[in-house]
Length: 111
Length: 115
Image 1 (cartoon, chains in turn brown, green):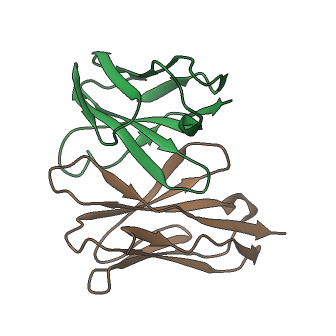
Image 2: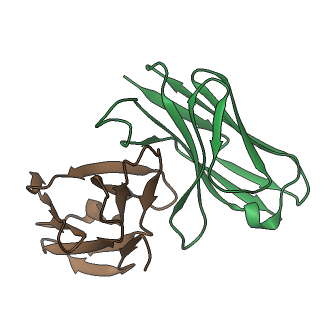
């Protein structure tokens, strides 16, 4: 089983739609979780952390399910500018500085 | 505010040639520094990280090396490039401390093509 697994997509959705991505991780001892956004040929940028109780930032909602070892990202009212690849990132926190990145899910929001 | 500079943005090099990519961070001191590589269709792979001047940890054995001659400078090098070294190279930094050392801020990346 891959350490961090994501559906590569692409997810093609119309403007205004709601879209959700899931990500599964294999290390049950993982401590921190994040979503990064990466535009084509650009650097990844931190979108939001994912907290155990779930958290929201505007149109974006992140949730964590430790029992099933997955995290999710929900985007409401999709905008054209949301088109990007969304990377799921897991931190083991075991004295290592290594984050494990998923390969990303590509989202295309269509006019 | 903190900024990270990475250059060059693109690089085309012949097989067997040397490589030097440089990254500098401004607006912070004693950061953790990282070099990642992103190959086409693959996730980010950590190559090196550094917690301080002269302290380099390698995550993947390869023909690349890294150095940190100053607190906010991180250099990725190779004596002889291979075709398999092609990819998108990203420098990143993070603060130290619980809750912060896992939040990375990336430079704009270098697209390296080895021909």
